[in-house]
Image (tube, rainbow, N blue to C red; front, side, top):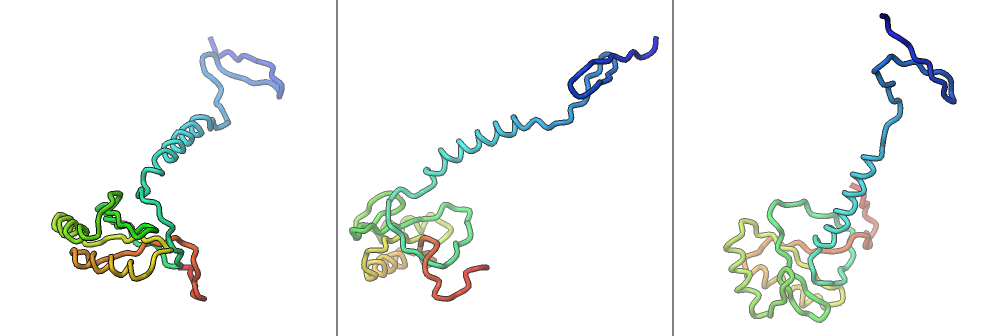
Length: 158
């Protein structure tokens, strides 16, 4: 009893196989990969809006690069177009800002804070809030801007 060959006719010629063995498939099946990529796309589309701090402001544009990422969630203070102040997403009165910052600074290991200010407010208000941040124990202040602003002739490629 030797190996038997089965001859089948197909559109491109004859194909030989042994009994009980399937022929090797030469093409790659990309359907599972496309399915996984579509699921990941949906997950990122749902999760991305949740990562943005919830106080809407029109940030000024700058040619400066982004700050490096850190392990602890950064503290964010936002100054709205009307001059109102929000700590993370919670609105706060100006007179309550320094005591709240001091309480937060006592619990945190990092003194970095991000200041987001609407581009239409006076610079004096930004400086006043920066002074309050400094008095509250936060000396490492990062100003948040949008990218794509004027570079004043500097090379922005790193």
